[in-house]
Length: 83
Image (cartoon, rainbow, N blue to C red; front, side, top):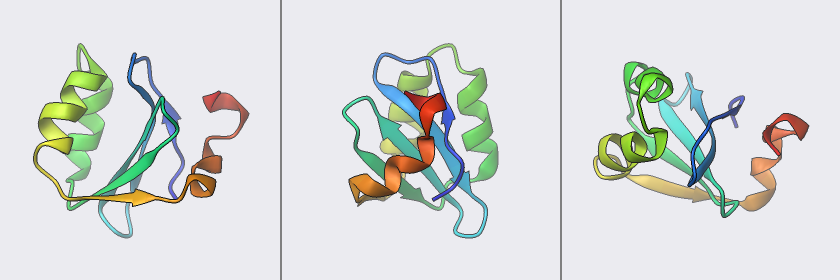
């Protein structure tokens, strides 16, 4: 699991990028984390500059890339800073 960076969003808690697999990880406020395969790092970085991180992730990541739901315990990489 990559380092997860907390974001300001009503729906998303944090995002991260795995350079080895090319997957963008998204942890939602629900606590569920998904890995989106094949996301270019540039798209991941654009999320930080989006007017709405949630809308950007929904339209540019969720709608376009295949996701794999990760086990909840793997979300612990957020640590105290993501709570």
